[in-house]
Length: 403
Image (cartoon, rainbow, N blue to C red; front, side):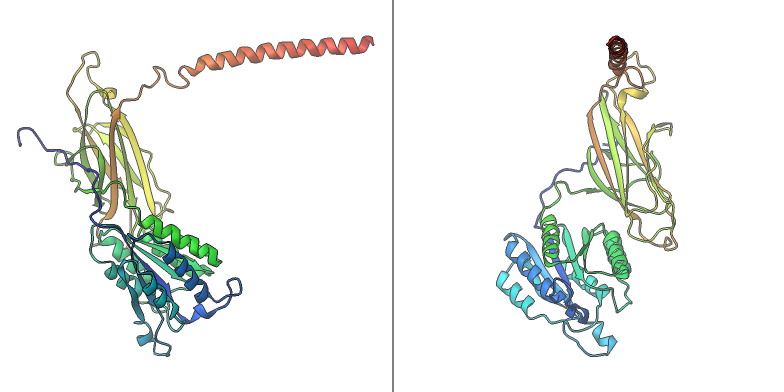
């Protein structure tokens, strides 16, 4: 095995052992009494939306429901900020039990969003399948600490397949910013709902999305600090974590006549200093650069992606001699991240996608290539049309003057 070299790692398509798990987290704090959605209270709209979603769920859905601010109506903030309960355990949908639990809810207390997110993650358990939390609230957390954005980053940093989607009911700007921060930290989505129909549609979309397992489960791989020790990869999808300011190296064997297509995406799970980016390069084993992707990153997105493509015949030192030996290509993922919380923090989650396909046939010359012929035909046609138009115009003017 040592004489033959490193055995390539594979990222094969795998079947999900169990269906994805979803937990709906509903804010039942006192502000949900407001009657400003089509003349109805926010809680009544949320209840009806939940009932509609429960009716439409597939039998295989693993669903749970957790509430916050639903039981304590006093003024003791220490007590009120612990007010979160799971009213429907995660499991196959029991529609009657779920609807009965939802029907008893009354707007009551504080809004401990950070604590509810932690408890919801625990409700979903440790599993290899996808896990999704859908948070529905009409206001920002009133119980910090823990700050819900910090909790979301903690959950993302654990490396688990957990996504938090957020839905704001008639949110103000502060609530919107907090919900966007929560969703971005875990690669989730944010949306606002101003009506019962919008809320129902949004929840259904998120639950349906969670019920679709990914076609490929990324294989875990650990990039090296240099090309010599880099793991050999084949086509597939891989997951890794890259420290701030780090370079990660991977290797791919590209056969003659093949084209390597590679892309990398990094999810940002914590605040970063401005003007950051990610870069993907392909080099020879000795460091000579073959090609690089466009440096991606404006400092304004929660996911950064870039990619490249390279054909094995592009860098042959002796092109006249055909060779059947593969070209070992070194892929380098680097970043220009900077953060005050970098010390001791885990690496940023990254996903590396590789594909080896037949090399594409590019034109022999740069630029338009064969398009020059079409350009020439169009130029000649334009010239003829111009001459004819000029001649007809002169004939018409001459005829008009005679008359």
